[in-house]
Length: 175
Image (cartoon, rainbow, N blue to C red; front, side, top):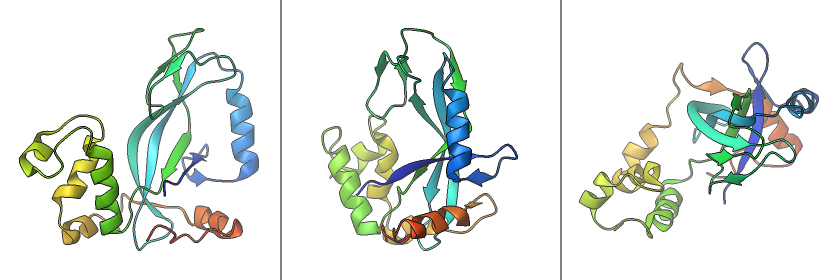
């Protein structure tokens, strides 16, 4: 299962998932002629619902009539109206981390067309599509779980977990 959603940082920089705030911000963006970017990704932390790793990321999106082309994954694109991009305060929340066995199986499946997933040397040297998943095949379970630690750089976002519960979604659905 792949689950992700869009939230934002409010004017003070705090994570926000309030519907009215998001809709107001999207309305503000609706008049933009630039290609719009999401530049941050919150990755879930297994065993710690509401705690996320904040990482740089890029997704592109467009206002009505502004999309020319977009790549698989929506990371880059073109517009018939402009070459200009505008960063936004939107954030992509991605429940990327799953149980070790599930994570390895999904990484293996995604990488299979691009690299010999049974060759550790080939995996270590690979830098193509999906290269960020290579570590999941090379790490032991203990190494994988060690990245799920609470650190000061993690983002606490309890309001998002409250929203999931209000929508009857178990915040531990991927564990």
